[in-house]
Image 1: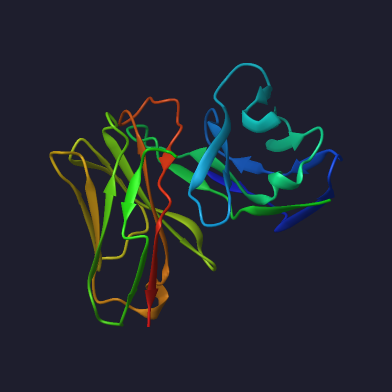
Image 2: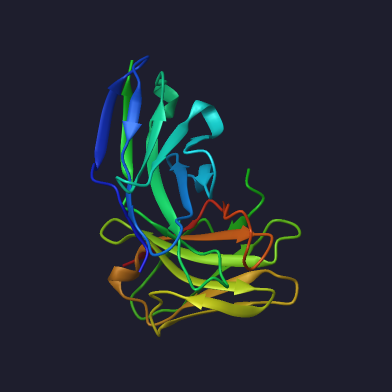
Length: 115
Length: 115
């Protein structure tokens, strides 16, 4: 079965510094990978996705993610963190059978950006 | 605002009771997905409906059932409630059943507390 792993429960970073939130995947076939963000008391919001093509994917709010097939990773990055980026981040993979777009989510990583 | 509406936002009930959670998808979206978010289980996929038809089923308990109506709104019914059913229940929608870009649009969730 498809799965994603987020090895860090929490990531702390100072405002203005680059941030990385890690995700590794395990899939059969070509991976369809996603990042979502959840702000307190809100639903999940789509940030970006990798389906095929360029390994560097750009998304909302200045976030980007790098797909690395050899390391089976899909890390989320941002060059300069903002306090407002503090939230819960989920990596996800589309799961077969391919008659549904259901996503399987990782356990989430809490990002804390300090002023 | 994702355009997905969930009611009620909060619900407190007792063990053994039955509740119904309602979801209205974005205008024009044919698919509805239900997820359960709890502290110990993370985000778990429950079920996917497309245009009234069940497309995929996840780790949904037999005490839980769902349906999608002709007007495309969906209801998740939870019965014989247990303390462990306390969680945030999310609904998400997307335009198609499969082959979409993969982006799901999430509502803000219904927080269920079982006492």
